[in-house]
Length: 321
Image (cartoon, rainbow, N blue to C red; front, side, top):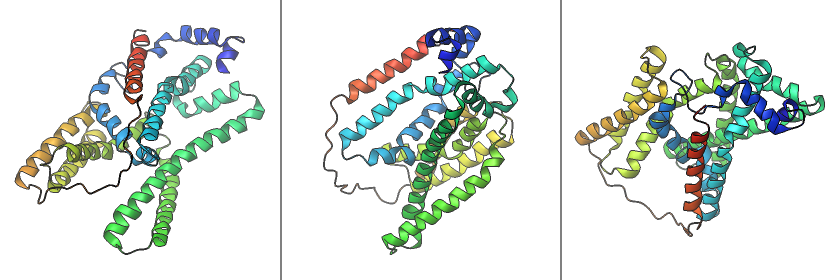
C-alpha cells in the first residue's frame, strides 16, 4: 500500500522512487561500521544460526510436534521459503519509512513503523493492523514461555526436585513458571526500551550469553565422544566470564559477533583440555526412542539446495549497490 501510494497507483513505480531516493539502503553487504558487518556471516553468526534453527526449543518443538519426518521437513523448508521474504517484510518498510521521514526519527527509531502505518493505512484499519501485530507478538511470547516452562518443569523440577510428582502437579508448576517469567518480562521491558543501538541489537548481545556456549556444548556432545561433563561445565564458566568482560565491561573494539566465533573455538579448546584430565566416567548409550517412521521427503535435498541458491542470488543481486 505504501508503494502504491508513492507510485501514484503503480507499486513498481513506487519501488523505483524509493530505490532512487536512497540506493545505498538496498545494499545487503554490511559495511565495516554497520550494525552487522558482512564479515560476521562467516564467524560467530554461523554458530548463532546453527543454535537458533537447530537447538532453540521455541523453533524445534514445532518440528518435534510433526506426525512424521516428512511433515517436519516440509514445515522447516516452508519456513526457509518464508525467511527468503524477510527483506521485503522487515527491511523494505524501514527503507520506505526513510523515504517518507528521512532522519527525523533517527533518535526515536521504534516510532518509524507506527508512523508508517498511520501514514499509509486508513484510520479504520490502523486498529485492525495493531491487533494483527499484537497477535504475532503474543504468538512468539507464548512460544518462549511454553519452552521455558517445559524446560523448568520437566528437566529441572521433575528430574532434580520432585522425581515422583504427578502430571497434574507438573502442569501446575509449568503454569506458575510461565506466570513468573511473564511478569518479569513485563517489568524488564521498560529497562531495555531505550537501548543505544536499538532493542534488536541489545537482544542479540544478551542472547550471545547463552546461545554460543549451549551450541558449542551440544555440537561437542553430538559429534565428540571424548568430551566430559566436567569439560562442558568448565567451558560454560570460561565463556560467561570472557564474553561478559569483552562485551559489556571492557572496550575491546571487536564486534560482539566476532567474539562469538572466538568464544566458540575457545570453548572447544577448554572442553578438550579439561576432558583430557577429567575424562567421561562412562560411555553414553542411545536408548530406543521408539521412532516409527523415518522415511524422508523425496524433495528435501532439492528444495534445500534451491533455498541456498536463492539466498546466494539475493546477495549477488543486492550486493553491488
